[in-house]
Length: 323
Image (cartoon, rainbow, N blue to C red; front, side, top):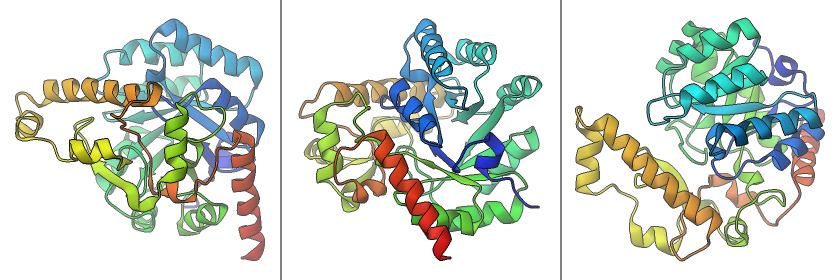
C-alpha cells in the first residue's frame, strides 16, 4: 500500500513535525514552525491549568489556520488526561500525538470530529495494535530519539513497520539535516518528527545554560537514564548526571517491577522526574538534567526557529534534486 506522506496528510509544505518537547515547546516555537512550511506540536502537560492550555491553543489558532498538534499522555500517570482530552476535542486541534498508554478512547472520540491521531510506538506489536484501533499514523520512535527512545535503529524500525503496517510512518529520532529526512523517506517513512535541533532555538524559554550545553556537548555525551521517569530517557551526560548515575537503585527497581506497586511507583517516579527536569530547564543549578538526542552533534549555535526550519527544508530540497 502506498502511504500518504505527512505533507499531503496535513496540507503543509514539508513532511516535518517539530516534536513536542516537555518544558521546551511553546507557542512561539509552534507559530514559527507554521510560518515556515512545517507543523509542530506541544505537550499538553507544558501547561499547568486548563485555562493556560486553552489560551495557548487559541493564541496559535488566531495566528495561523495551518495545522498543529498536541501531545497527550494517555495513561494513569497523567491525572489531567480526561480534562485535557475534552479541551482538545472542544477546540478541535488538527491532530493529537498519544504517548505512554492505550489510545483507544482518543481515537474513538477524535474520528467523528476529523481530528487525526498519531501514536508513539517503539515496536511492531504496538504499531499493529494502534493501527487496528484506527490510528491515522504512527510516530516510530527509534534509538536515536531524544527523551524516551526506542531500541531499534531508524532504518530497522521504519523497514519493519513499512513491511507490516498500512498507515503512515512518521520517523522520530536522529534527524538533524535535510539529508537525514530524505534518507528516512527513502526507507519508507511518510515524514519525520524532529526535536533535538530545535532545543537551542531563540524562541525556547529555557535557561541559557541549557542552550549552551546543546552547543558544548556532542553525540558521545548522550546517555540513557532510568532515574527520571521509570523508563529509559536520553539526557546529556553532565557532571551531575555522572554523579547521580543512570541506573535505578534497588528500591526504585523493586517498585518499578512489582506488579502490585508498579502503577503507583511509575506515577511517583514520573512526578519526581518531571520536577527534576523542570528544575534543570528553568533554574540552572549544578543539578542539571537536560534531555537531548544524538542529533545534538549538529547543534553549533543558538538560532531562530525560522533559520533552523529553513536550513532543514533547503537541505531536504537539495537532497531530492541530487537523487
